[in-house]
Amino acid sequence: MDMSTIYHLLSLINLIAVTLSVLFAKKLYDSTRGAADFWLFLSAFIFSLGAYILFDFIEKLFSVTFDSPINAAQDMSITFAAIFALVSAIYVKKMFDEMTGE
Amino acid sequence: MVVKKNKKSGKIVDRVTKIKSGKKMPLKNKTGKKETKKGNKKLNKSKKDRLKDVLLFEDIKRNVENKQIQENKPADVIEKVVLTQDTQINQDPILPMVRFGSLIPFASKRNYYTIISFLFILMFFVGGYIYPATSEDIASNYVIWAGNEGKYDRGLFSQFYASIAFTMGVFLLGYYVNATFIRYNIKDWNYFSIGILLMLFFGLGRIGELVYDHNIFEGFKNIVLPVALIVLAFASYKIYKNMAEAI
Image (cartoon, rainbow over all chains, first blue to last red):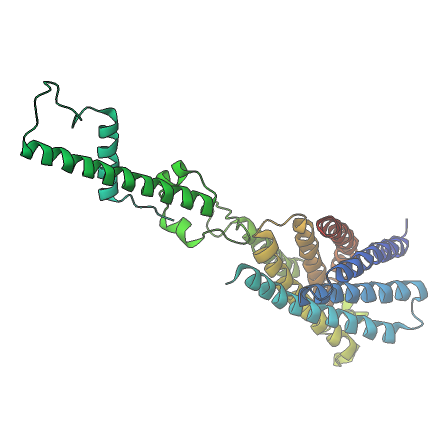
């Protein structure tokens, strides 16, 4: 099997896995709405990952045609994922501090 | 909570039990002789004392029972419990904290994440020395430090810095998830922590493909990413399921 075929298959697996993650992240956010900011930013982190994987899938599907804008979009989504990961890390600590009364 | 036994009340209780058993201070003189005034006074005193003692005993009994009702603990436990300083500090915590002791210094369960991350970062740097960027990578402009006739590729730079930011953000998220959810042993967050660790590996792979051997690090990144996403999907499913059951 050719390497590019394997990468195409992997990107399809990524897309399916991230769709499931986004679905459950949305359900988590809906069930904990307003409870703590941590859930909001955690779901935002997973949504950003979803966006990254979606752009990756599109890039693999259409290869060179939209290379630069797709790469830029991927960079942006992964930067947002980094920001949301950082903010959710802060909020999870805050949430547990409030819960334990420290 | 420390319950100190009052010495006075203890003596009184002993005295009352002795009185009840009838060993000391008999009520009547066996000879049946008339009691003198002194003897009557003594008898009266002892009667008064006994009455006082019985009343005190009843009081103590009532107090213990009241405490038992308030704290919902049996009286035996209240008397026997001798708490250490440690347990006094963490009285009835909201979340039971799990302390994972280990013989290896700093290798408690919540620190495994940090140790594995640092080990992997070390391996990543070592991998950079073993598999540096090939001439083919430089010619194809896959690495940021060379190629394009000495001109920098801005696109690759933004990808490089975005990857560094992503790796750092994911590392911090994983660290705090381990310091909170894993520390308090909350169900199914282990999977999420593993998923985050794999995402960290993916981030390092993304950095590596821009500075070291492109093919090797790209291959590594492409293999790790689906595994990480599957683990994250499974973790989010499990967490949601538990939360839905709890609600």
